[in-house]
Image (tube, helix red, strand yellow):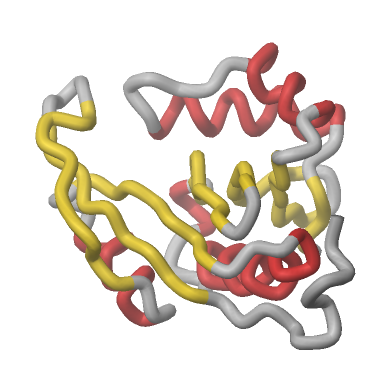
Length: 154
């Protein structure tokens, strides 16, 4: 089930961050996102176990994916795709028309998923990642804003 991140998810997400990223979000930073009105973090959990999460921040019509990860044993099950599709369903209500992300240029599984979902490469950020140093592809997708919402979002 996909739900918004809550306090009970923080330690598991922080552990997944630490296991997957060289510069991970820590528990305090994740906790702060719970109070951030610009943030939307979703988790996919089975029972009490977080299998994956995605975090975004939105500003006006743009949302940036800040982090996304799936437990190694839960990969190749369509979980990341389900999280991204749920973001695309929820973000238009916040006035979002575009989702942007950075991805390691060598991360072929992620690149394949983003391309499958309609993200397009916009450019390159040289030496964006550390440990190991690597370029990032900037990718973006336009999402549909429900015409009934235009002019009603505050």
